[in-house]
Image (cartoon, rainbow, N blue to C red; front, side, top):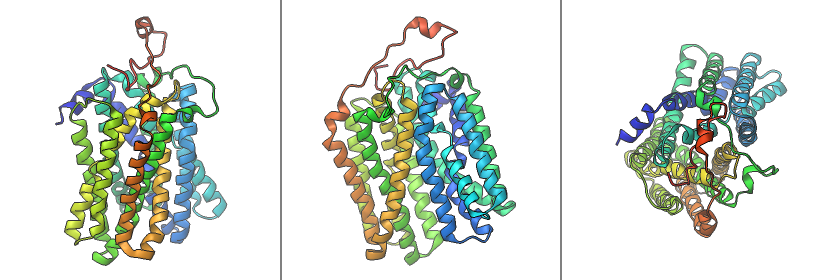
Length: 419
């Protein structure tokens, strides 16, 4: 099973790019918990902590596609590293100034979120210039989705460890310094320095002028809502079945399920149309959410949440292939960044929606929200099948261009093309 991943990691530059990107994304992965712990250590209320974390999230959602467009226009090092530095400096300023004066705290947090570098989209744009075939790129997408689950599981544990050993302030500064080092590792690599986007048509909509990409954004807005609603429903369930420990097990289980599912998905080469495969995966994702409404005892519920997570990473990995296929020429980083933004917005929306539902009907109705959201995602894909299956623009890279040392390295193929 691990042979495909090992093959990729043995490829020159691949391990450095993956690890550097994961490390560089650490500040974003732990921002919410790090901000909450810091505000509470300063004597702030949970409402203030939540508001500051929300401001970071909104600013991050706005900044990702904007910075992604700049990367497509000017290259990775000229955008990624300055953005990482500004983001880290802003969060460090927040760590040293605290919550007083409050307007400064909001400005610092907003700037940090806005300038979070789009390393996630940047990595996916680089894979086709590093790897030798379409099959390897698809495996790399799956490996990326699996690595995300590891990061979002380990990251919060690292923050809480730093807080216990030193302080919440030190944790906030440290994770951002580490994030800059990760970004630096990526942008100094030869593939990142050499990468250039395709020539693009000037258009204010950028990647959003692609109908296929809009379909994917609509579908994954609903998937994000499903994931966000589970987090809230799990709190309500845990309150009645053992408290915080049970909640921790539920969240760990859904992450473990995604880890197992993504690993299995990436371990084989898939044939056939990715559009059809995505519909099947989203259907399975929606079906696996339904048993959560049974709300059995903690052990059985933990098992059900693990099953509910099985198809999340495969859905993301398959969607990445289609994003690359449908991104207009010269907008691939921006297109991947839009997926990140949409998923984040959907998750926040699901959290907001599940709260009133849980208050009105309890955990059972709260767990019904992800099933409905998964069904909506499937309906979007079914209703727009022709749009998603429309052929994407193709590109041929001349051999002379590939061998020209004065020309920036470009992908040898688009992931939607035949290898």
